View 1 (tube, rainbow, N blue to C red):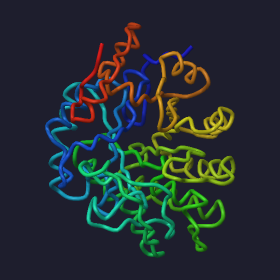
View 2 (tube, one colour):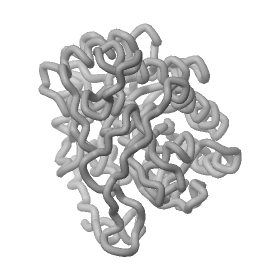
View 3 (tube, helix red, strand yellow):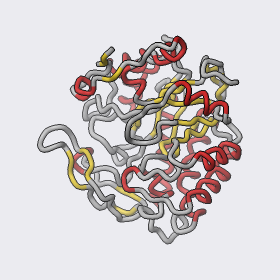
View 4 (cartoon, rainbow, N blue to C red):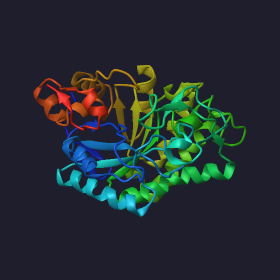
Length: 353
């Protein structure tokens, strides 16, 4: 039986184990989008993971969803990421940057840009615009629908950010196609009401995701590119019709690109996820914790997924209070519980024994 502690070859990387630290928003940088010394310390402490995936990094101001999140769209940001990737590598780790375009999940108060989306359809709910005043949330605005020319430019933005990620020392990138952000907005049937080549049919709805992946693979090499997906996930008011057909078509279209991996959240029935695993030719990462809510993912749960065909298992919130998660799983030590109050006050390692 495959163990979480067995090595794995991911593209050109030799992973010492099959545990992945999932991407998690930190909101710990300034308005300039520059990572800090605390960013480097945070990731370096967790470098025993087989692979680290960074917090979502916006490819442009237009793509920024949350306040105080980092970017990869100018040279100052590239320079500021280098100490982070260097610290991870010095500690023996490997790290991919998650490129995250928020699309309609944004607000002018965050980055001074009006959010865009496949169509002019607002999500039902509020978005976070920053601490201070009330609870820091405001109603989501109606996004501006991207023109046909702009759609292509936004797909290319992932590739531009990927080039900067490699220049900053990242080992690769993960395209954020999950959790209701821009790529999943195109996949959806409620946020995407386009009648051109990027909407309507399954073939139209998957086109943006495929073009973003193609452009990124061409830019830095497919072996350095992964994509994260949440089949049927409904975060940020996203609805997807025909989930089995939609994701079967998406996987079929992405498979020839030779991407390093697909990273799937457990947001669909197991039989659908297992079918997608069987259709995928390269590494398959599963996140058993699903989407927003209690994450009770365990070592046993991860090894069960390995037995069913997954290659790697990602863990999210367990990593917040347990930078040494790999060793705790290996020895059977109890996991520490995150001190949420300390975390939200800005602490990156506040936990309770």
